[in-house]
Structure formats: C-alpha cells, structure tokens
Image 1 (cartoon, one colour):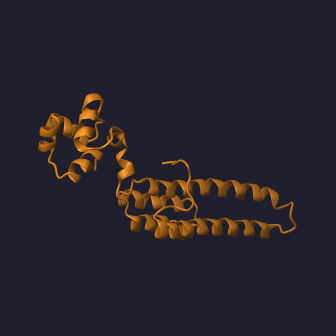
Image 2 (cartoon, rainbow, N blue to C red; image 1 turned 90 degrees about the vertical axis):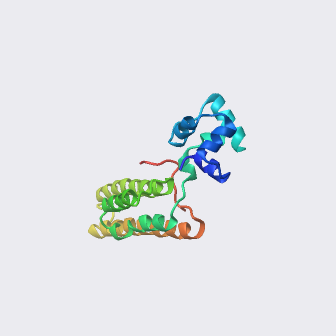
Image 3 (cartoon, rainbow, N blue to C red; image 1 turned 180 degrees about the horizontal axis):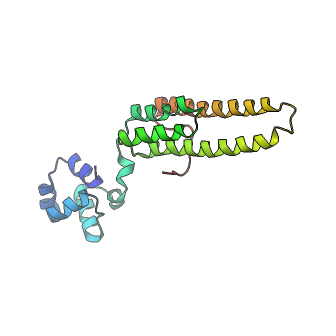
Length: 179
C-alpha cells in the first residue's frame, strides 16, 4: 500500500475528496498511489492537506509493510532441516519467500544471513581440509569442523527465531541485504 493511500485512508478520505481538498487532480493522486513519487508543489500541497511532513510522503513503502512474523518464523526455520545440505538452506527459504510473497526486509535479511553463512562455511571447510595434517586428529578434525559448522548454523537459526518471537526482529542481522 502506498504511503499516500495509507495517510488518505487514515483521514477517511476518498481520492476524489482529497482532490477537492488539495486542488490536485484525481489522476495525479492515482499516479502517486500507484508508485509515482510526488514532487515540488504537489508534494507540499499533499503533505499540508494530509497534515504530515513532506519527507513522510517520500519514504519507501517497504518500510511501512505489514510483516507477518508467523511466516517470517517459518521462512527462518525452513533452513533448519537443511543445515547439513548447505545450498538447500538458501533455496528453501527463498522458495517460501516468493510463494508467500514476503518481500520484506526481514525475509531478505534471513536469506542474506544464510548466504553469508554458506560462503563462510565453505571457506572454513576448505581451510580446515588443508590444516587437518597439522593436527594429529586427521579425519577426525574434519568431522569436528563439519559438526561445528552445522551447529553454528542451527544456533543462528534458532536464536533468530527466538528473537523474532520475543521482539519481532532478528538477533543476527547484517547491515546490508544480498537479495
């Protein structure tokens, strides 16, 4: 839902009523509500008419999405059964994200975390295969590394799920999204 539409509906105004109050054509209001960014005088007039700041009408609608945290938890937990098959722990949450139409920042962050974890796990695994001869453990060292990698991913998934449940946010998050 566009920010203009959300603010208009808060005031129980139709597009036509907003048009009359602001002097902006209905067609322009329709264009802005469908995604066109208001500019200049139009922005000033609409902000004044709706009683909001101009920059509020320019914020991305993504920040105002209603997030279904039950689905977010399912998307996050969907990586859990596939922690031993690393590429699947990205594919399954992505499939759920697209089928359930959860294109919000939290779902994107969950998949991004799994992508970063996969890259780091691959690097650690490759480095440990070179280092196994340095330790007297041999193949047991590789087993320990694999168990550590799987348990670290399980911990990340479960800790994020607990935080989503308690505070509706992720415990482990990145300052960027990869998708």
